[in-house]
Every structure is written in structure tokens, then in C-alpha cells.
Length: 405
Image (cartoon, rainbow, N blue to C red; front, top):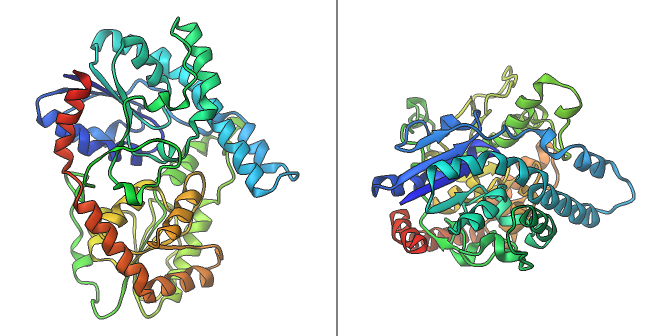
């Protein structure tokens, strides 16, 4: 079986795909990952072919529409969110889908895939699969969870007309063959798409993952708090370094350097804990930080979470799944996009708390509340049991083989 997989966005999207791609490759299937130059390294240690031919995902992909939307003063938060969802869907199902198809059709003509796995933000592959008559499934991502397919119908049907494909008015056609997830139904974060082919979240995602020795020497007579802000926002700001109009962020989001500064100040407040802060390579002044705070650029998060008492997180979907897998209570400080919905859903499920007071004192207070809340700890253990009851990811191979015929 030949499997074509697309990855755009941030490294977390690729890491979410790795467990399934490894299982397919280990079973002898030919896997081709079509991605962007900046994400190719995510797959470098795996037995898959990588074609870095997709355009890099930058703020200019969205034009100026979202930034202008955020500046409107005549909208309340609900109206702004609704319009943002619509605008995002129109971009993904229109100009971005067309741009991706320009690359994907020649690749598919040469590779002749039997099955397509796609990034949740890639709707071009939906049409490519329809044209080739093969199944396609979205892989775990915030876009798969939050994108309202009703807003994609018009744009996709316009492109279907250009491709001489029949019009499809069913919004769920974007997941006509289902979707892949690593979360059980009772703890699903998907807002619009139907049930998934669900498999057990893998703890060791990166093959070379190992904790540094200093972590093993941390004090164990006090709670361990781990703080991380993810990779998506720092990546976006890095790509904006060139400046110019196209570098303007498409959505309102905090400056990651300021967010990191606030997080480290909150860590300093937690003087009855040991706190590890992952900086994601962002600059931070550690001068004067108390000895219970430890700064590090990056750690293998899924492994460390097995020993963490509270996870102070931005609420990206990879981090959500990893905390579910390890029964780690969360204090969620969302930054942009689906992270706000994830924070709300985490609180609804009783797995943690959303942080609304974004001051150092407010962040520290929520972390302490989560530490003390026995109901949250019990609920996270329930989630871990549900995660462990899912089939191992290797069973996805048989399911996908059946779909591909």
C-alpha cells in the first residue's frame, strides 16, 4: 500500500502523525510525507520518504483578514470567534487548498497513492483524494477538532467545479472515511467531526528521547510543576523575523517572549514546588530566579509528564493528549486559536483549570488550586484508564488497509 501524508503548520502536527506512519512503515507499506522545508526534520529519523515541496506556512498565508477582524470594536467575543472560524474555513477551503493542490497533484500522479492522511489544515488533499478515488483521513490536530466543516462547502465546491468533480453539499465530506485520533470518545476534543478511529497515545514519540541527568536529581519532597508554551507560537514569531506587512500575525496572540517572562515569574511564586520551565528556544532572563525554578530550552515532554504533578500548558492538542495519557492535571494558559477551546473543554471534562487571570500571581494561584483539587486528580486517572483501553496504534495498519481495499 502506498500512503501519502501531508503536514503543514507546526512541528506538533508532524509529531502527531509519527506513531501511525511508523506503524505503516514497519508493516512494509510505502509512506511518502509531503511537507514544508521547515518541518522535514520532524521525520528525519523514521523509515518514510520525505518530500519538502509544500510552501512554508506563514502569517501571510491568511492575508490581513484575521488581523483586521481582531481590531474591530463592534463585535463581542462570541461574534468575533464565529467570524474568525468562518474566515479560517474560507481560507483553508479556498486559496490555501488551491495552493496545496498545485503541488500535490503532480506528486500524486507520480506516487499513485492508495490512501491519503492529511494535516487537519490541508483541505486540498480532500479534493485530491476525490479525484483519485481514494480514501483520506485527517490526523490529530487542533484544526481537525475545531474547524467547522459547514463553512468549507462553498469553497470546496468552487474547486470541485474547476476539477470537474461532482458538487458535494454534505459538510462532513471532508471526513468521509473518518478521522484518526488518540483520544477516547468520552474525552474527545472534536467539536464538529464524527467519531474517530481511536488508538492509544504513544508516550515515546521521538525515537531519541531521553531525560537529562539533572532531572533525575530534582527534589521529590515537593510537587513537580512543568511549564511549556508549545512550538506553534514561537515558530510563527520566528518566521516573522523578516518583517514587512506579510509578517503580521493573522490573529491576536501574546508575544511569546512576554508570555515566557510571565510564566517564569509565576514559577518563582510557586516556592513550595519544584518548577521546570521549557523555553522553546525563546530568550528569557533567568537572573535572580530562585533555586526551585529550572530553565531548559526543551525536554521530551511525554516522558517528563509521567512524573509531573501539574502541567502549566498553552493547551495545544498534542500537550492535551500527552497529559491525558499520563494522568497529569493541567493549568491551561491558552495563547491563540484552538487553545482557548481546548482550555474550556479541559475544564468541562474536569481535567484541569483554565487560567483567566494571566498575571504571575493569577497563574500561580490556578496551579496551586489544581494541585489541591482531588477531584481533578481522580478525573485524570479516569482519563488515563480510558486512554489505556484504546487499541495500540499498530492496529491502525489493519484498519487503514481495509479502508484502502
